[in-house]
Image (cartoon, rainbow, N blue to C red; front, side, top):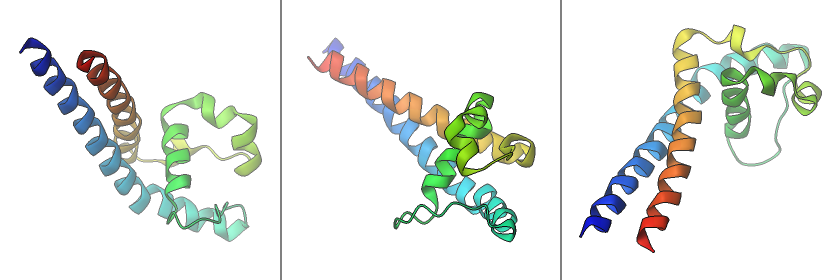
Length: 120
């Protein structure tokens, strides 16, 4: 019976992480990505992923770049968006949404791993 309560605990953590990640991605897509797309399309620097993702790949890239400065310094990020500083462009609300997205992904990943550990 004790294992079931731990499984339920980690399942709720994983579900909360997924909800935080999805809500954060949606909010960032409607705010930060939309503003950056307008700014970058004017100069021709916006990267279209070429898939039917409605800009969520770019939103995930911007979320990681907003939370971790290291991502903005990576060579691949600089190839796609040269000289772009996402963190300084984002306002406080968008930074919180970015941290919620990345933190939700980490919480969901850890919750699922521990759920299956205690299921065995």
